Length: 162
Image 1 (tube, rainbow, N blue to C red):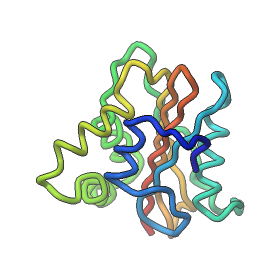
Image 2: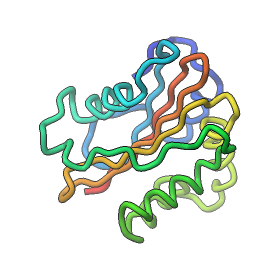
Image 3: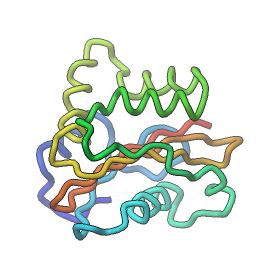
Image 4: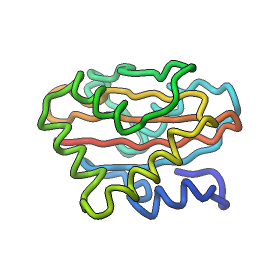
């Protein structure tokens, strides 16, 4: 889901390294959308979550939806640390092991992946960064990360295991 034919380089790199959005159960999904500055970021996150599940969210997909982390405005971004710390607080070690496989599938590409993620989420241009816990609490567990820049460029990276 992206609303512009001209994607910023950091988004092109993210999509090339991971995957463009594909609504299918399980795995990793990415989104880019340019929204009006000040738009409710949780509603944008829910729109991306809904798209992942084929356009509708049954009540059971919302059982585990909650804001798990919001970066304090005075903090410099550290996406990888923020994600792993938050995921460990929500789920168990198995989930963080799966995150490691999805984020850094090839150990030789780990530095490249970290640089891509830093360009997306750790730049001072990101004025709002959040991590949501999501899923049905039983069969499907996930985290949805979303960052919004001052100009409305919004990037989402979500991970789900079943």
